[in-house]
Amino acid sequence: MESEKSLNSPDLAGTTNVANATAAMNASAQGGPRWLRWVMLAFTLVIAAASLLGLIGKIADFGPTLFASGAPYGIESVDCRDLYLAPGIVDTRVHQGDDALARGNVADAELSYRLALKVDPADARAREGFVGAAASLAQLQFEKGDFEAAAGSIAEASAYDPESVRIIALRSAIENARLKREIVISNYPTYKLAGQQLQKAYAALDDSNKAILKSLKRFDYTYDTQDLTKAIKASYDLQQDLARNLNRLVAYRGLVESGTPVKGDAPAGTAGSLLPLP
Image 1: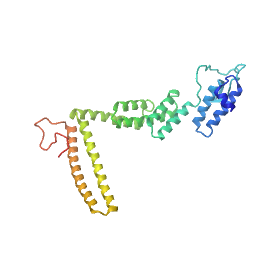
Image 2: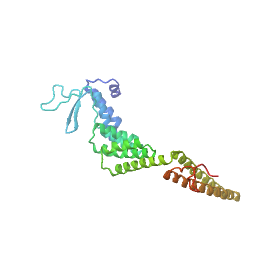
Image 3: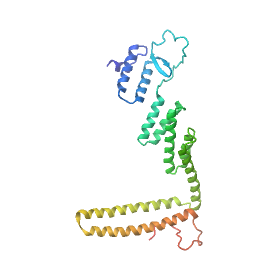
């Protein structure tokens, strides 16, 4: 096609090429989202290497022969040689952020809104989107225990909306967790390893429960009471495991709250170790 030929080997001085390029770009974006049409227009303008007439924030006309004999009297002229003209780039970034949020990709959303703000720091949609995405990202970082990264995300969001209730509440939660972490580390330096062991022990209870359900479901088609016997035995074992885990959990809480007792001073019945009980 002629338009494809013009796009592959553009004649930057030819008005025919501008028309063909525009037609090809419009055809490729037909039926697509508005931000895609903006991008296509930006590429069209770059290919055309044209002069551009803007009126009240809108593109009124463009083309290589526009103002060939000089700009009209009184019009403001800006030399954009060696620069890129990208109409709608803020809209594009905001739409990318919205799409990323809809897919649950908080990190990509935060980046898209951030890039939009680099172009227009005052854009209300970009500011609102960035604050929301940064808060969600901070929550994820907080839940992973990365307090420093979470605090950084909160600080960046606060720069655009310092009175956000969500940001203020999350900052307070992070600061409280930091303080409590220091107390726990001081009381029980090996708390993390013990906590991981407890999590594994409770996760194993899920496996036991699934085994019981499997035996019950098997009885539905075998009618073999041995399946019920297995479920009963597994239930007794599960009950004993739960009791052991509960004792370990109570001991764990005591250690992180009060610290590891000095040898010889431990009250009767206090567990000095969180290793699996017999």
